[in-house]
Image (cartoon, rainbow, N blue to C red):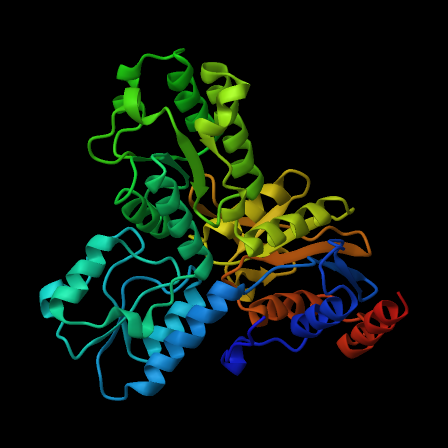
Length: 412
């Protein structure tokens, strides 16, 4: 796989070394058990796979390249490069200005842009409508387009299905940048509807099978379907694609649910004419992160700490999985660990910041699951680990522990 030129301050002397030793020992990623870093009074379980993925590293490399290649020029990002506040702050400190916020609200008027300006397309991609605006201004968007190749793969698959007269069902959050972009591209070639989760999908399945009247469609999916969508006509042939950061298992469950509905309506013998297999659109990195999280769930631990941006979809899903078994703390940086008695964290479900006292148990060793989302630099995970190690002065030196782990994997 391609090696990217990522700024040194994003790289990690601890986590990077752990990842490299696991990669050497298991290059095909058949083993999703965590790496154990045993410091004595505190033990960390490090997920087999997490952190920057191919699409994120590609986006970061292009963004910093845009800064280096265009001294003196105005450089804009359509919106956040990725959902990580530290990365976005650093880009802004280098003179990059955001045109929109993550919700699509305009911060810089299109009229203020000129053909000489540089505009970077974020990793989520953008809509065809925004592409048209930029081209009309005279901006060459291909120069610094960081759209993730796996997002583009979803768009390509949706286009193929559209040419085969399928309707596209997008599993995603309809206000998320990536889903807005996918919806825009998909509806060019096919009727398109967005479902958020299994609950949404069950409603769509009930419309397909006639358990709910067709007239309910407009109410249940208001603002989530393409113009001119006719449920009587457009729910006869369907295929499911996803926002790449959604839970892969949920996407598959949604596809299975809708396939069952089509079988109920048309019969198993006719299913190939009514339902397309789209498993090939699932993002490998999201899948690996989630499989690694399931590997964590098989372990005993006292708590889980998940590091990432609070508006990161893929990170929130890792949090949801960890919450099934452990007290889980979603933090954006090491600074959120105020002391050994206090942590400031984010409740994703209610979109609120919380402070929890006595989050570290009194027993020793304390076993902590540590992981992050795909938009979080490994250096931030290092900082969290070192912050916690500071609360345990009798911990073994980091170098000693890493050498022990290296010897273990070398002998495995």
